Image (cartoon, rainbow, N blue to C red; front, side, top):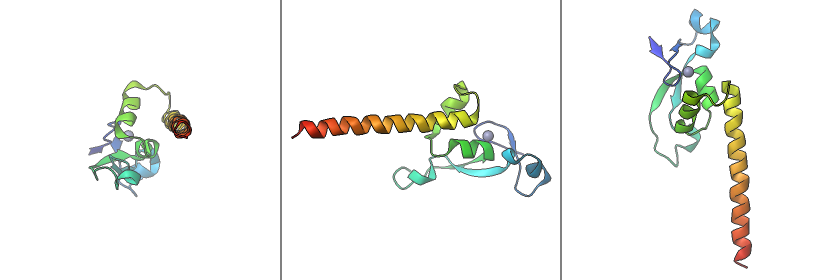
Length: 107
Ligand SMILES: [Zn+2]
C-alpha cells in the first residue's frame, strides 16, 4: 500500500477500480521541487502523491504547500491554490514597483 507523501491518504494505481471510483486518490509521481523550476533548483526527489495534492500543489514551493496542509489556513485545497496564486501575483507587483522606483531613482 502506498500513501500520499503530503496528506497520507491511500493512493491507487491508474486503471484500478479503486482509482476509477476515487479519481482524487489516483497515484501520481510528484516532483518535490516543482518541475518547471528544476532547471534552476536541484532536480530533487520524486514522491508519491495523490492526484488531489499533486494538482493543488502545482508550482508552490514544497515548504509552502506543506505549511498550508498542516495549518489549514484555507478550508479547501482549491482555496489553498487560489491563495497562493494571489500571493504570488501581489508579490510580483510589489517587487516590480520597488524595482521601478529604484530604476527611476538612478536617473
Ligand atoms: Zn494527498
